[in-house]
Amino acid sequence: MRYRYSRDPHNLAHVSTDQLLDAFAQILTQCRTMLRPGGTVVVTTRPWRARGELIDLPSAVLAAGQTAGLIPTERCVALLAGIRDNRLIAHPSFFQMQNIRDARRQGIPLHLVQHEDVLIFTRPAQDCAARPTTSRPMPCTSRAQCPNRPTDRCGYHRADKRRRG
Image 1 (spheres, rainbow, N blue to C red):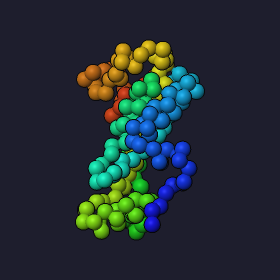
Image 2 (image 1 turned 30 degrees about the horizontal axis):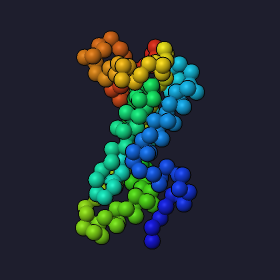
Image 3 (image 1 turned 30 degrees about the vertical axis):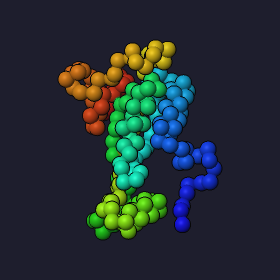
Image 4 (image 1 turned 135 degrees about the vertical axis):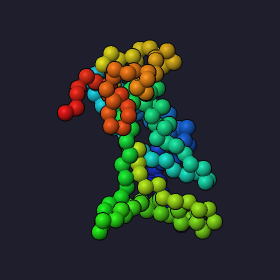
């Protein structure tokens, strides 16, 4: 028996990876238009496997956000687990468990993805949306590129001027 999120053919769960990423870019572009300068968008996403190959959706969504004119400000990990009796207990979805069981029955030694990436984007203070994305400079991602900009605990530079206490 095959399980599905829905039977609606317009649901993004039923489109190709390329179509999904195009849809993410469109959604994030619309988010940018709705945000005030300095406003944030938070996306949680995780990789998945297709025919045994790991699909790195978090990195692709990060690139889609940049294409949409947003600045990535944080990339953190959210564990999909709880703590019981001082032990970390995974909380996989039904679909994850089904996929892992199917793969293992076929002799493929897959393991559960036990985290999601939390991607935080900021709308630039001066919106660059009118400029083509290829001419927009990439945000600095290392202290060597922008030594005077503060970074958050995940290593990304904060896009706004607020100081954390």
